[in-house]
Length: 314
Image (cartoon, rainbow, N blue to C red):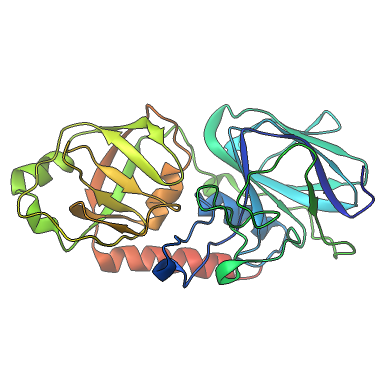
């Protein structure tokens, strides 16, 4: 046991990663942005505690976490619907939770959703790495607690800030809490290679459902549904973007996500908007989803509204 202020993890969960808003300015080195998969839940966890947008928090995939606090502080737990308990007493999600030194916090496996976000008052005190970010990249071996890209292990100790001024008890209203059971429709900005997809293929893509397959992770989401045919010559590899919809030779779309490769040569129909990707991050394999086209201007307004809201102080 340590006397340092922070949390010591007795159960690290299936995949628990330290994530912030992602790193910038490193794609030319072959390093993607990373960061929280569901920015909506991640940003609310920090906002409840008065933490600035971008503050590191934990992204907990499929729950199963337990830790002991070594300081008096506050936390917030948002995202996937887990059972949160402090010393075996239930606590509400999407709200501030007061902790005392010696308290034990546990998070169950989720009933709905995939990723839970846990923020602490003042943020976790981890030194940033490339691009000023501590976002954990398991594939690249960068970011995280020791800047080695590994997930949390049993026995890890995450430092927290002491003597932070507490915030009032807050709760996110139901209006802002998404229902992860709702039918999922992803907004798509058509891309420069849209002309490689015949009109009948685009009609199929925007009218037929696709299914999220188990071959889905932080790097990309593989879908199963009507195969999409492309025309034209083989493309030269080029930079990829978050949400890009790649269509390989089998015609089954792949959505590129936070930990994607930075270049690729498959035809790209367009890109799923960041706000739609937030919703996708909470859907388990087997989820049926549909696509709808959206203009670049609409997507920019949607993203601007999101960033402006979470950049304002409560």
